[in-house]
Image (tube, rainbow, N blue to C red; front, side, top):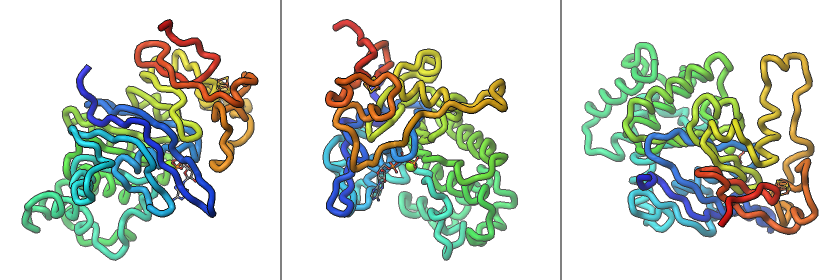
Length: 327
Ligand SMILES: Nc1ncnc2c1ncn2[C@@H]1O[C@H](COP(=O)(O)OP(=O)(O)OP(=O)(O)O)[C@@H](O)[C@H]1O
Ligand code: SF4
Ligand SMILES: [Mg+2]
């Protein structure tokens, strides 16, 4: 297999809040491969955004800190690079569409200025050249009459159009990796599918580029991703190719998530949900992070954290009850 685009080793990102430590990400290892759409799924608070923000060191410090780990990209560990080098990677090589689009555009600058900004920062372009490229980028994400809209301010755009602008900005430098954190959650349902399709279409046209798609929705993963990581309690609980995961989910948490996907034939029936609530980040169990909610919990689960083991090629699971491959 070819070298991954991005390789994360044992990432730990913690927050200090009121004298307590929140281990938001505790020991995540993963790979992002050329050409793939990698999904990261899990309930709210499972550590999806903090994991992705750590890749490009966008963790607010304080209260956050990347305590340990390695993030290898093009032969360099991004966690050890000087800040000016990290800024060159951000936006140019690794682009990000943030979870809160409404707060990611600056209300006092025109749309044109904001779309041009990454080009002017990363390339030696004249303002006229950057302007033309920005018009093309807005046109490419389906903003009607893009040239005339360059001078508008964000409040003059609808939510769906602002999200298209965010996609244009994140992709304008042709990044090798696009991180899309819940890119459509803030949009109307009718617009969600259009915006997702637009993003994936732009991705398909870029040879070898990868997308990391963060969502709490397994149905979105099924439709769009090739591989998926299931996160809970700041850790990867299961990882597999999408088809394998849907055909053979092994972790009780993954099974719970799958049971809560609505099916057409279930119309009118009560949906299964995972019992209990996500535990407080300050009070995660010592053993398996899912033990307070797991329907098949055993005594050892409370005290022993299971390792993430490979049970079939590319399929890794963190559960005491799933037999591993023979050594
Ligand atoms: N700036 C911060 N200060 C303190 N705690 C934080 C901060 N950012 C994240 N956390 C905590 O880290 C944990 C993981 O948060 P994260 O944002 O990664 O969750 P998520 O999986 O992306 O959830 P969601 O689906 O709601 O976006 C949460 O418990 C959250 O409260
Ligand atoms: S290790 Fe135990 S508590 Fe955790 S998912 Fe497996 S059976 Fe459930
Ligand atoms: Mg998030």
